[in-house]
Length: 110
Image (cartoon, rainbow, N blue to C red; front, side, top):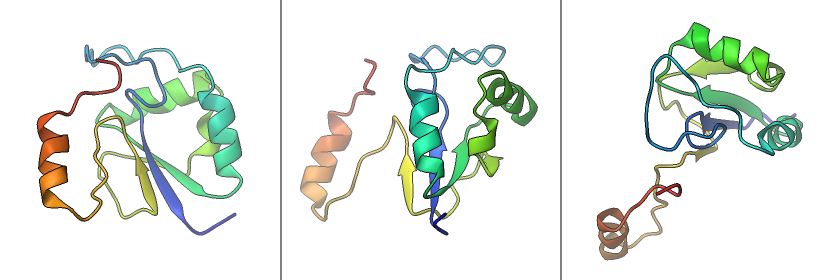
């Protein structure tokens, strides 16, 4: 396994979140997420990023048989090799382009 860490967001990346946040319910796992995590975990340390309750999140991971792929759950965007999030923009060196991307941003599920 690599010593590189990947930080993956829960809502909108690993589950079927569509923007209607309910702190009591974590949406069902996305099709293909478990296979993706299994493959990724062979080469990287994976941390789950979420603002959700840590115990509730751990229960969801266990229920979906994917807990083994994560080395930690955090609510802090810690240093990582890459971040996988449904609400991010990649900076490619040009602020004008970046500003346009920010102004026209929509989550993939919108």
